[in-house]
Length: 116
Length: 114
Image (cartoon, rainbow over the protein chains, first blue to last red):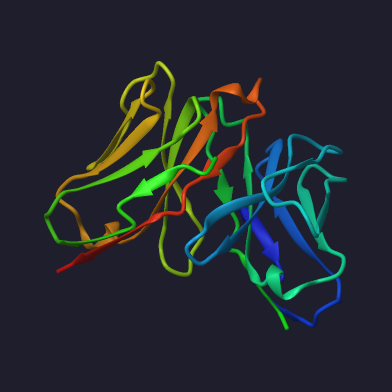
């Protein structure tokens, strides 16, 4: 099992460019999440999905869009990148929601994005 | 809504003990602890549920005081491998159903020296 994989690992964009980050999991998890991690800020939830075809906003959704067309994939899009979106992006997946005893989030290796 | 972790950083010698605290201003249903080593992804350590018992992980254990909305992570006889940043994630009581997400704290950086 590959677990959670993210593509690409690194990316440099110019202000105004767009891009899509791909997250894939092979654990048949229902829940998937996109976080951003900035120095001293911890992990902040951007968007999440509780199943195929569903998405919802997290704490910091502005400037991002997501899609979950297939259960195993969760895409994060930046339509017009800004320097404030320079960050490390982590995708995670879980079998259940946070209220369940079985809740454990499995994280991908991260994508380091720089917007110039 | 972000939980507050303390201390922000701690330096230990091998074999020493440490306590990391996590405090929320919101009523909690669950507290989750993760560890992240430098340049790597966070890794799950344990979960504590409202009304549940204290959970352990080798020499790492945790407690959850539901009334105070606080959790503490106890690292006993620390090892070099314990170095990293520890995050607590809180599941809010009023989130509803099984769709609760986690709100993570800013982290506590733990450095264990030989």
